Length: 146
Image (cartoon, rainbow, N blue to C red; front, side, top):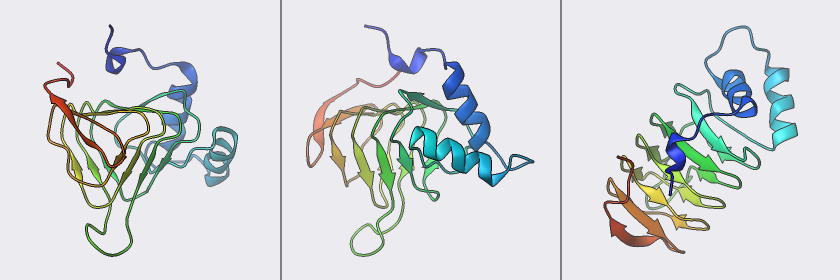
C-alpha cells in the first residue's frame, strides 16, 4: 500500500496552499471566498499542507504544523480555552491525520505519527505511533513515514 504522504499535491490543493501561505498581496476577501467554497479554515501556512479531499478542514490559527503534514476531509485541529491542557496542538513533521479526526488542546503529535479516522486525540502522541478511537489509544508503534 502506498503511503499517502508521498502522493503528489493536486491543483486544488496547491491553490489552497498558495492562498493561505504567507502574507503578501493576497486579499483577505480571496481567503474568505476559498474558506466558503471549500469549508476550510486554515492558519497562515509556513509549509505546504497536503489535503486529500480538502473540504471541511478546520485548523486553529495558533496550531504549529510541521513539514509534510497530511490531513483528510472533516479534520479539526483546535485549541482548548481552559482547563487541563489549555492551548493549541503542535503537529510534528510527516504526520498523517485521517478523515473526521479531532486533535484538541496543548498536546504534541510526534513526527511520523498517524491518527486514525474518527479519532479524538486529547493527549500527546509519541513519534511513529498510530492512534485510533475515542479517546485515541495507541494501536502500535513503528507505522510512521519512512
